[in-house]
Picture 1 (tube, helix red, strand yellow):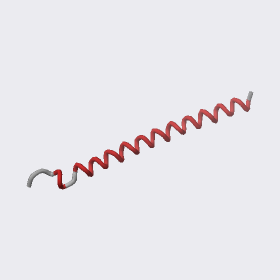
Picture 2: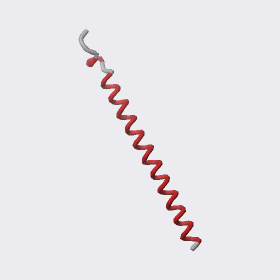
Picture 3: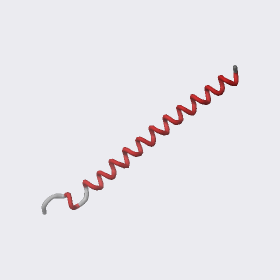
Length: 50
């Protein structure tokens, strides 16, 4: 029984780590997309007539 409990605790720890990692990766992807859009919007060709 003790071995099973320890295994379940490890499984929960791995699931928690995966959740944190996937959240971090999603946040990183969103930040990369925002920065790419900012670069496009700040391009001189989009600054309007001169």
